[in-house]
Image (tube, rainbow, N blue to C red; front, side, top):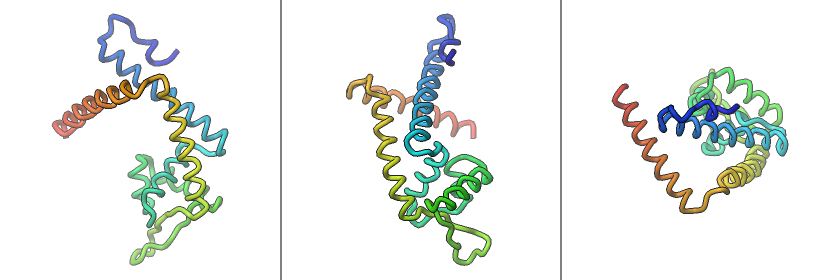
Length: 158
């Protein structure tokens, strides 16, 4: 039973919408995880780390990667160690700080990431194939309003 199935008609529409959003996210994420594993023998966290590095060609310090990925430093270290072994990323010294390392994509890592990113994009496009262009634009706009309201509420409580 998915999360949405737990809601009943007596629950507020907002709760039922929230559960539908969560269910859709989980279903799409499950498909992406399975496809990454099947087609590239990799995981979503590894893809996410490569994605962060692709956006920063000069590389990122481990604590920057951890913050951007919203995971612990230990998680980033474990993934990075695997990717270094596979020669997809490399560690380089940080000038002026002998204890710090910058992690960046290798040429091989960049090539593989671009292949994965193209497929990832296709999987996401397919996930929304049940909507036409107008519906996608409308949903995007409406979710933008939800996001804006949530950000406003977060700022007020901070």
